[in-house]
Length: 346
Figure 1 (cartoon, rainbow, N blue to C red):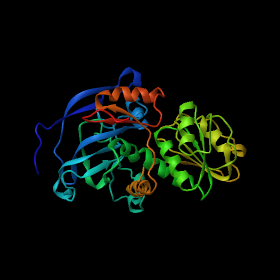
Figure 2: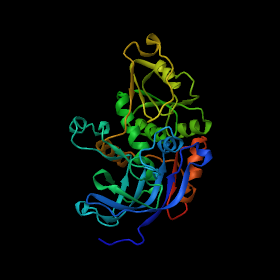
Figure 3: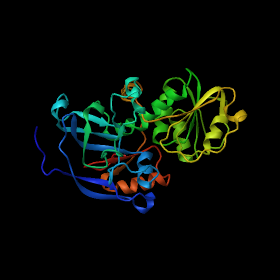
Figure 4: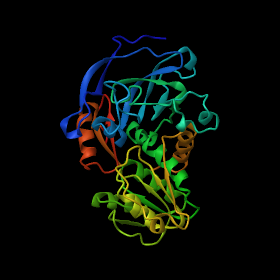
């Protein structure tokens, strides 16, 4: 193992949770721990800017780690590997996602539902994330990534893509069915493409005219305002927008037996539901909680078969605070991605 010197990294931290426009992030030089037995020291090439990062920075999610570095859509290369992770050679291209660790022993882990582990840990919340030049990750929760696609295109797959894939599973979209997508940011624009590749008809509902145009370019059959009625009843729907006010609208748009999956980690208050209008005739409402590593592997395999168009707005690492503020203000169409050590491609 070759030591790096000095053992510090330039990184953003959540200084004090506050609205993104007020600057909750601060750029610091942070000590960098050597990788433990099962860990990898990774030089970051790109890191996606996820709405979960925004929830953490603005205080919607209570901090777990003081002065935590956000970011959990990390693409980079291995610089050092601990003795129990020696199968990751230096230079190996890897990704780190939201799920950073689980106990491996509870009934949920034993049942293959490690996303529900009560002792689970998360990248950029419980351990430092990828808004940095370097990051230490657990090799058992890292993904080997293919050569070829740019770092900026791979980064959003590691959360936006994976969580959208799990949301599709939770929504139980039937083969050839009609899917409603509410909100059209980073995760939605990847998920919609996967549903189209699977043969679904996709209807998109979003306030953003730019996002509606992008949805149609990516294969959606319809794109309208978030409050619009769908052209046809929906067999399944996914709510990506963090607005509880949309839950009744989406449920009412479902056909008999349809399911709405709520994909976000944070949601504003849901208004009272009317049983007859919103839930009767076996309409279902489900939450989505993180993902399993099996979800990640399955989704990345899907992207090898059906390579998505990843609509990226790039920012250098030095402008992570601007990227977060742009996301909060609705100025990002597709995915915002930080690049490290070079100018962004998108």
